[in-house]
Image (cartoon, rainbow, N blue to C red; front, side, top):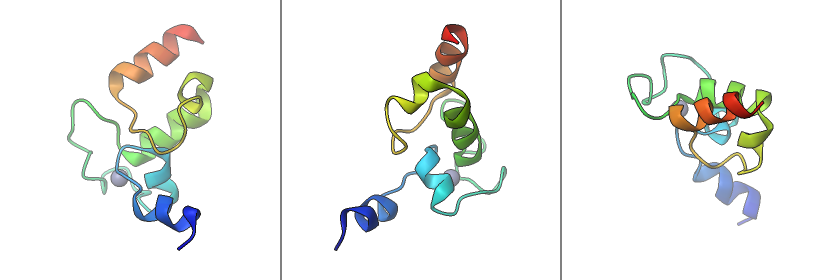
Length: 74
Ligand SMILES: [Zn+2]
């Protein structure tokens, strides 16, 4: 099995990879009501906006705290 497929199968919610892997609706993500971790939709959007978040790669879940930090630094 290829590395790419491994990554896609392991894509977790709250990550840009989760969005790319098909979790694309705002309310459809299991993280929708989570107070700490973003949904895949929001993670994808934040990832596109903030360089700081892109540094860690698309498979890392993005928390609200991380987003606040990224906003402060840009
Ligand atoms: Zn999701």
